[in-house]
Amino acid sequence: MPDRPRLLILAFSPIHRDARVLRQVRLLAGRYEVTTCGYGPKPDGADHHVQIPDELIYWHKSRSLLIQRRYAAVYRSNAVVRHLRDALPREHFDVVLADDIDTVPLALSLHPRGGVHADMHEYAPRENEHLWRWRWFVAPYVRWQCRTFLTRVDSVSTVGEGLATEYDREFGIHASVVVNAAPLAPLAPARVADPIRLVHSGNAQRNRALGLMVDAVEAASRPVTLDLYLVPNDAAYLEELRARVAGNPAITIHDPVPPADLPRTLAAHDVGVFVLPPVTFNYLWTLPNKFFDYVQARLGLIVGPSPEMAGLVRRHGLGAVTDGFTAADLTRAIDELDPANVARWKHASHAVAEEYSAERQVQGWADAVDALAARAR
Image 1 (cartoon, rainbow, N blue to C red):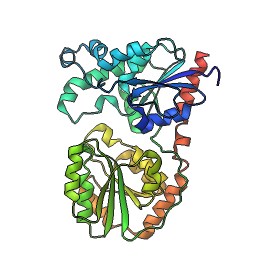
Image 2: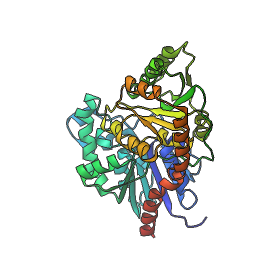
Image 3: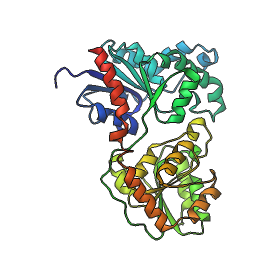
Image 4: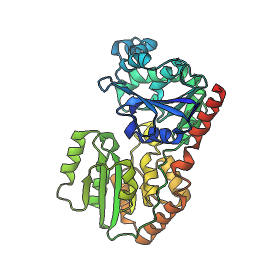
Protein backbone atom coordinates (compact mmCIF):
# COMPACT_ATOMS: atom_id res chain seq x y z
CA MET A 1 0.00 0.00 0.00
CA PRO A 2 1.76 3.18 -1.17
CA ASP A 3 2.18 6.33 0.92
CA ARG A 4 1.05 4.88 4.20
CA PRO A 5 2.02 7.06 7.18
CA ARG A 6 5.12 5.78 8.95
CA LEU A 7 4.40 4.67 12.51
CA LEU A 8 6.93 3.52 15.10
CA ILE A 9 5.61 1.47 18.02
CA LEU A 10 8.34 1.69 20.66
CA ALA A 11 8.27 -0.65 23.67
CA PHE A 12 11.06 -1.88 25.91
CA SER A 13 9.38 -5.28 26.10
CA PRO A 14 9.19 -8.49 24.02
CA ILE A 15 6.43 -7.20 21.78
CA HIS A 16 5.63 -10.60 20.24
CA ARG A 17 4.21 -11.66 23.64
CA ASP A 18 3.23 -8.32 25.15
CA ALA A 19 -0.57 -8.45 24.94
CA ARG A 20 -1.22 -4.71 25.13
CA VAL A 21 1.43 -3.72 22.59
CA LEU A 22 0.34 -6.52 20.24
CA ARG A 23 -3.14 -5.00 20.22
CA GLN A 24 -1.61 -1.73 19.08
CA VAL A 25 0.23 -3.48 16.25
CA ARG A 26 -2.85 -5.38 15.10
CA LEU A 27 -5.04 -2.28 15.29
CA LEU A 28 -2.75 -0.08 13.20
CA ALA A 29 -1.15 -2.57 10.77
CA GLY A 30 -2.25 -2.15 7.19
CA ARG A 31 -3.31 1.49 7.37
CA TYR A 32 0.18 2.42 8.61
CA GLU A 33 3.67 1.34 7.66
CA VAL A 34 4.42 -0.07 11.09
CA THR A 35 7.92 -0.35 12.50
CA THR A 36 8.15 -1.99 15.90
CA CYS A 37 11.07 -1.66 18.27
CA GLY A 38 11.45 -3.98 21.23
CA TYR A 39 12.99 -7.21 22.46
CA GLY A 40 12.53 -10.49 20.62
CA PRO A 41 11.47 -11.22 17.04
CA LYS A 42 9.27 -9.13 14.77
CA PRO A 43 5.64 -9.41 15.85
CA ASP A 44 2.96 -10.43 13.38
CA GLY A 45 1.56 -7.41 11.57
CA ALA A 46 4.69 -5.25 11.67
CA ASP A 47 6.31 -4.22 8.39
CA HIS A 48 9.73 -3.66 9.97
CA HIS A 49 11.31 -4.43 13.33
CA VAL A 50 14.26 -3.05 15.25
CA GLN A 51 15.26 -5.69 17.79
CA ILE A 52 16.82 -4.64 21.07
CA PRO A 53 19.71 -7.03 21.90
CA ASP A 54 18.76 -9.27 24.80
CA GLU A 55 21.94 -8.45 26.70
CA LEU A 56 20.93 -4.79 26.98
CA ILE A 57 18.67 -4.37 30.03
CA TYR A 58 16.46 -1.31 29.86
CA TRP A 59 15.81 -1.06 33.60
CA HIS A 60 19.51 -0.98 34.53
CA LYS A 61 20.33 2.53 35.73
CA SER A 62 23.54 4.08 37.04
CA ARG A 63 23.30 3.98 40.83
CA SER A 64 25.86 6.73 41.29
CA LEU A 65 24.06 9.05 38.89
CA LEU A 66 20.73 8.31 40.55
CA ILE A 67 22.20 9.16 43.97
CA GLN A 68 23.59 12.40 42.53
CA ARG A 69 20.18 13.10 40.96
CA ARG A 70 21.83 13.67 37.59
CA TYR A 71 18.73 12.39 35.86
CA ALA A 72 19.49 13.49 32.31
CA ALA A 73 22.81 11.63 32.56
CA VAL A 74 21.00 8.57 33.97
CA TYR A 75 18.86 8.41 30.85
CA ARG A 76 21.65 9.15 28.38
CA SER A 77 23.87 6.46 29.91
CA ASN A 78 21.26 3.70 29.68
CA ALA A 79 22.54 0.92 27.38
CA VAL A 80 19.26 0.50 25.47
CA VAL A 81 18.88 4.25 24.90
CA ARG A 82 22.48 4.52 23.68
CA HIS A 83 21.93 1.61 21.28
CA LEU A 84 18.65 2.92 19.87
CA ARG A 85 19.96 6.44 19.32
CA ASP A 86 22.00 4.95 16.48
CA ALA A 87 19.49 2.28 15.41
CA LEU A 88 16.42 4.52 14.98
CA PRO A 89 16.37 7.29 12.36
CA ARG A 90 15.42 10.82 13.34
CA GLU A 91 12.75 12.78 11.47
CA HIS A 92 11.77 9.60 9.60
CA PHE A 93 8.49 8.63 11.27
CA ASP A 94 5.19 10.45 11.04
CA VAL A 95 4.04 9.24 14.45
CA VAL A 96 5.65 7.45 17.39
CA LEU A 97 3.51 5.43 19.81
CA ALA A 98 5.66 5.15 22.94
CA ASP A 99 4.80 2.49 25.51
CA ASP A 100 5.62 3.31 29.14
CA ILE A 101 7.68 6.15 30.52
CA ASP A 102 11.19 4.89 29.70
CA THR A 103 10.49 5.12 25.96
CA VAL A 104 9.07 8.66 26.02
CA PRO A 105 12.27 10.77 26.04
CA LEU A 106 13.69 8.69 23.19
CA ALA A 107 10.43 8.98 21.23
CA LEU A 108 10.51 12.78 21.53
CA SER A 109 14.16 12.88 20.43
CA LEU A 110 13.21 11.19 17.13
CA HIS A 111 11.18 14.29 16.15
CA PRO A 112 8.30 12.51 14.36
CA ARG A 113 6.53 14.88 12.01
CA GLY A 114 3.08 14.43 13.53
CA GLY A 115 4.06 13.87 17.14
CA VAL A 116 4.18 11.33 19.95
CA HIS A 117 1.38 9.43 21.67
CA ALA A 118 2.38 7.84 25.00
CA ASP A 119 0.57 4.79 26.36
CA MET A 120 1.18 4.33 30.08
CA HIS A 121 0.63 0.76 31.25
CA GLU A 122 1.06 1.70 34.93
CA TYR A 123 1.13 4.78 37.11
CA ALA A 124 4.86 5.07 36.51
CA PRO A 125 6.00 7.03 39.60
CA ARG A 126 4.59 4.35 41.94
CA GLU A 127 5.25 1.19 39.94
CA ASN A 128 7.56 -0.57 42.44
CA GLU A 129 6.79 1.42 45.55
CA HIS A 130 6.75 -1.72 47.70
CA LEU A 131 10.59 -1.70 47.41
CA TRP A 132 12.20 0.97 49.60
CA ARG A 133 15.26 1.36 47.37
CA TRP A 134 12.98 2.02 44.41
CA ARG A 135 10.97 4.59 46.39
CA TRP A 136 14.10 6.43 47.52
CA PHE A 137 16.21 6.38 44.36
CA VAL A 138 14.14 5.48 41.29
CA ALA A 139 10.77 7.10 41.99
CA PRO A 140 12.20 10.67 41.97
CA TYR A 141 13.84 9.90 38.63
CA VAL A 142 10.55 8.61 37.18
CA ARG A 143 8.72 11.70 38.42
CA TRP A 144 11.39 13.81 36.67
CA GLN A 145 10.73 11.85 33.46
CA CYS A 146 6.99 12.51 33.78
CA ARG A 147 7.41 16.23 34.53
CA THR A 148 10.06 16.77 31.87
CA PHE A 149 8.93 14.53 29.02
CA LEU A 150 5.45 13.06 29.49
CA THR A 151 4.04 16.57 29.76
CA ARG A 152 5.50 17.32 26.29
CA VAL A 153 3.91 14.51 24.28
CA ASP A 154 0.87 15.24 22.14
CA SER A 155 -1.53 12.74 23.75
CA VAL A 156 -1.53 10.14 26.50
CA SER A 157 -3.57 7.02 27.27
CA THR A 158 -3.55 4.66 30.23
CA VAL A 159 -5.28 1.50 31.41
CA GLY A 160 -7.90 2.74 33.87
CA GLU A 161 -9.73 5.72 35.33
CA GLY A 162 -7.87 5.62 38.64
CA LEU A 163 -4.49 5.98 36.95
CA ALA A 164 -5.78 8.67 34.59
CA THR A 165 -7.04 10.66 37.59
CA GLU A 166 -3.64 10.43 39.28
CA TYR A 167 -1.73 11.55 36.17
CA ASP A 168 -4.02 14.57 36.05
CA ARG A 169 -3.72 15.31 39.78
CA GLU A 170 0.08 15.11 39.98
CA PHE A 171 1.19 16.30 36.53
CA GLY A 172 -1.80 17.97 34.89
CA ILE A 173 -1.74 15.29 32.18
CA HIS A 174 -5.15 14.49 30.69
CA ALA A 175 -4.99 10.81 29.73
CA SER A 176 -7.66 8.90 27.87
CA VAL A 177 -8.47 5.36 29.00
CA VAL A 178 -7.89 2.25 26.88
CA VAL A 179 -8.55 -0.82 29.02
CA ASN A 180 -6.70 -4.11 28.56
CA ALA A 181 -9.54 -5.73 26.64
CA ALA A 182 -9.00 -9.01 24.81
CA PRO A 183 -10.21 -9.67 21.25
CA LEU A 184 -13.83 -10.74 20.93
CA ALA A 185 -14.01 -14.53 21.22
CA PRO A 186 -16.82 -16.42 19.41
CA LEU A 187 -17.88 -18.38 22.48
CA ALA A 188 -21.05 -19.01 24.46
CA PRO A 189 -21.47 -19.72 28.20
CA ALA A 190 -20.89 -23.38 29.00
CA ARG A 191 -22.91 -25.36 31.53
CA VAL A 192 -21.76 -24.99 35.14
CA ALA A 193 -19.86 -28.06 36.34
CA ASP A 194 -20.13 -29.97 39.59
CA PRO A 195 -17.85 -29.26 41.37
CA ILE A 196 -17.61 -25.65 40.21
CA ARG A 197 -14.36 -25.04 38.32
CA LEU A 198 -12.30 -22.01 39.39
CA VAL A 199 -9.47 -20.73 37.21
CA HIS A 200 -6.69 -18.14 37.33
CA SER A 201 -4.26 -17.16 34.57
CA GLY A 202 -1.30 -14.82 34.78
CA ASN A 203 2.23 -14.32 35.99
CA ALA A 204 3.87 -16.37 38.71
CA GLN A 205 5.18 -13.47 40.81
CA ARG A 206 5.67 -13.56 44.56
CA ASN A 207 4.07 -10.17 45.25
CA ARG A 208 0.84 -11.32 43.56
CA ALA A 209 0.12 -13.60 46.52
CA LEU A 210 -1.06 -16.55 44.44
CA GLY A 211 -0.88 -18.79 47.50
CA LEU A 212 -3.89 -16.86 48.78
CA MET A 213 -6.08 -18.72 46.27
CA VAL A 214 -4.61 -22.06 47.26
CA ASP A 215 -5.25 -21.37 50.95
CA ALA A 216 -8.80 -20.23 50.22
CA VAL A 217 -9.70 -23.32 48.21
CA GLU A 218 -8.20 -25.68 50.78
CA ALA A 219 -10.17 -24.00 53.58
CA ALA A 220 -13.47 -23.94 51.66
CA SER A 221 -16.32 -26.20 52.72
CA ARG A 222 -17.82 -26.18 49.20
CA PRO A 223 -16.04 -28.63 46.87
CA VAL A 224 -14.42 -26.75 43.97
CA THR A 225 -11.47 -27.23 41.66
CA LEU A 226 -8.81 -24.62 40.93
CA ASP A 227 -6.68 -24.55 37.78
CA LEU A 228 -3.77 -22.12 37.53
CA TYR A 229 -2.21 -21.25 34.14
CA LEU A 230 1.00 -19.50 35.14
CA VAL A 231 3.77 -17.75 33.23
CA PRO A 232 7.09 -18.62 34.96
CA ASN A 233 8.29 -15.07 35.66
CA ASP A 234 9.78 -16.24 38.95
CA ALA A 235 10.81 -19.87 38.47
CA ALA A 236 11.68 -20.37 42.15
CA TYR A 237 8.30 -19.08 43.29
CA LEU A 238 6.52 -21.26 40.74
CA GLU A 239 8.30 -24.33 42.07
CA GLU A 240 7.27 -23.37 45.60
CA LEU A 241 3.66 -23.23 44.43
CA ARG A 242 3.95 -26.61 42.71
CA ALA A 243 5.31 -28.15 45.91
CA ARG A 244 2.57 -26.45 47.90
CA VAL A 245 -0.26 -28.04 45.86
CA ALA A 246 1.38 -31.42 45.24
CA GLY A 247 -0.96 -34.20 46.25
CA ASN A 248 -4.07 -32.02 46.20
CA PRO A 249 -6.23 -33.36 43.34
CA ALA A 250 -8.47 -30.28 43.44
CA ILE A 251 -5.66 -27.85 42.49
CA THR A 252 -3.63 -28.09 39.29
CA ILE A 253 -0.85 -25.82 38.01
CA HIS A 254 -0.57 -25.77 34.21
CA ASP A 255 1.93 -24.31 31.81
CA PRO A 256 0.80 -21.05 30.19
CA VAL A 257 -1.09 -21.25 26.91
CA PRO A 258 -0.59 -18.98 23.87
CA PRO A 259 -2.82 -15.87 23.90
CA ALA A 260 -4.78 -17.15 20.89
CA ASP A 261 -5.67 -20.34 22.78
CA LEU A 262 -6.47 -18.70 26.10
CA PRO A 263 -10.20 -17.96 25.65
CA ARG A 264 -11.10 -21.56 24.79
CA THR A 265 -8.84 -22.90 27.54
CA LEU A 266 -10.45 -20.65 30.14
CA ALA A 267 -13.95 -21.40 28.80
CA ALA A 268 -13.62 -24.96 30.09
CA HIS A 269 -14.04 -23.48 33.60
CA ASP A 270 -16.78 -21.58 35.42
CA VAL A 271 -15.35 -18.73 37.50
CA GLY A 272 -12.21 -16.65 36.97
CA VAL A 273 -10.56 -15.58 40.23
CA PHE A 274 -8.29 -12.61 40.97
CA VAL A 275 -7.81 -11.22 44.48
CA LEU A 276 -4.74 -8.97 44.57
CA PRO A 277 -3.71 -7.37 47.88
CA PRO A 278 -3.10 -3.64 47.20
CA VAL A 279 0.57 -3.52 48.18
CA THR A 280 1.12 -0.73 45.63
CA PHE A 281 -0.97 2.07 44.15
CA ASN A 282 -1.02 0.25 40.80
CA TYR A 283 -2.19 -2.96 42.44
CA LEU A 284 -5.01 -1.07 44.17
CA TRP A 285 -6.22 0.27 40.80
CA THR A 286 -5.51 -2.86 38.80
CA LEU A 287 -7.72 -3.67 35.81
CA PRO A 288 -5.64 -6.41 34.18
CA ASN A 289 -5.73 -8.44 30.99
CA LYS A 290 -7.08 -11.45 32.86
CA PHE A 291 -10.26 -9.63 33.87
CA PHE A 292 -11.20 -9.21 30.23
CA ASP A 293 -9.89 -12.68 29.33
CA TYR A 294 -12.42 -14.08 31.81
CA VAL A 295 -15.20 -12.05 30.22
CA GLN A 296 -14.30 -13.28 26.73
CA ALA A 297 -14.26 -16.86 28.05
CA ARG A 298 -17.82 -16.24 29.32
CA LEU A 299 -16.91 -16.93 32.93
CA GLY A 300 -18.26 -15.59 36.16
CA LEU A 301 -15.75 -13.63 38.22
CA ILE A 302 -14.66 -13.45 41.83
CA VAL A 303 -12.48 -10.40 42.47
CA GLY A 304 -11.18 -8.53 45.47
CA PRO A 305 -12.48 -5.06 46.35
CA SER A 306 -10.06 -3.37 43.91
CA PRO A 307 -12.09 -0.31 42.79
CA GLU A 308 -11.79 -0.72 39.01
CA MET A 309 -12.54 -4.46 38.92
CA ALA A 310 -15.16 -4.37 41.64
CA GLY A 311 -16.98 -1.51 39.92
CA LEU A 312 -17.33 -3.40 36.64
CA VAL A 313 -18.35 -6.65 38.36
CA ARG A 314 -21.09 -4.89 40.31
CA ARG A 315 -22.24 -2.73 37.39
CA HIS A 316 -22.79 -5.67 35.06
CA GLY A 317 -23.56 -8.46 37.54
CA LEU A 318 -20.50 -10.44 36.47
CA GLY A 319 -19.82 -12.18 39.77
CA ALA A 320 -18.87 -11.62 43.40
CA VAL A 321 -16.60 -9.10 45.14
CA THR A 322 -14.87 -10.32 48.28
CA ASP A 323 -15.10 -8.31 51.50
CA GLY A 324 -11.33 -7.96 51.70
CA PHE A 325 -8.05 -9.21 50.30
CA THR A 326 -7.40 -12.22 52.56
CA ALA A 327 -7.71 -15.95 51.95
CA ALA A 328 -10.55 -16.03 54.48
CA ASP A 329 -12.44 -13.41 52.45
CA LEU A 330 -12.06 -15.52 49.32
CA THR A 331 -13.05 -18.69 51.16
CA ARG A 332 -16.35 -17.06 52.21
CA ALA A 333 -17.05 -16.11 48.60
CA ILE A 334 -16.30 -19.67 47.46
CA ASP A 335 -18.55 -21.17 50.13
CA GLU A 336 -21.40 -18.93 48.94
CA LEU A 337 -21.14 -20.09 45.33
CA ASP A 338 -24.40 -21.31 43.87
CA PRO A 339 -24.58 -23.00 40.44
CA ALA A 340 -27.61 -20.95 39.41
CA ASN A 341 -25.84 -17.69 40.30
CA VAL A 342 -22.70 -18.79 38.48
CA ALA A 343 -24.79 -19.51 35.39
CA ARG A 344 -26.24 -15.99 35.59
CA TRP A 345 -22.75 -14.52 35.93
CA LYS A 346 -21.57 -16.41 32.86
CA HIS A 347 -24.49 -15.10 30.82
CA ALA A 348 -23.77 -11.57 32.09
CA SER A 349 -20.21 -11.90 30.74
CA HIS A 350 -21.65 -13.03 27.44
CA ALA A 351 -23.89 -9.96 27.34
CA VAL A 352 -20.95 -7.51 27.70
CA ALA A 353 -18.31 -9.48 25.77
CA GLU A 354 -18.63 -7.29 22.68
CA GLU A 355 -18.64 -4.03 24.65
CA TYR A 356 -15.47 -5.05 26.51
CA SER A 357 -13.64 -6.47 23.50
CA ALA A 358 -10.42 -5.09 22.08
CA GLU A 359 -12.24 -4.25 18.87
CA ARG A 360 -14.39 -1.74 20.78
CA GLN A 361 -12.01 -0.55 23.47
CA VAL A 362 -8.85 0.21 21.46
CA GLN A 363 -10.46 2.90 19.33
CA GLY A 364 -8.82 5.46 21.59
CA TRP A 365 -5.41 4.53 20.20
CA ALA A 366 -6.66 4.75 16.62
CA ASP A 367 -8.15 8.20 17.23
CA ALA A 368 -4.93 9.51 18.81
CA VAL A 369 -2.59 8.12 16.16
CA ASP A 370 -4.87 9.19 13.30
CA ALA A 371 -4.92 12.75 14.64
CA LEU A 372 -1.12 12.90 14.71
CA ALA A 373 -0.83 11.35 11.25
CA ALA A 374 -3.22 13.99 9.91
CA ARG A 375 -1.00 16.67 11.42
CA ALA A 376 2.05 15.11 9.72
CA ARG A 377 0.29 15.30 6.35
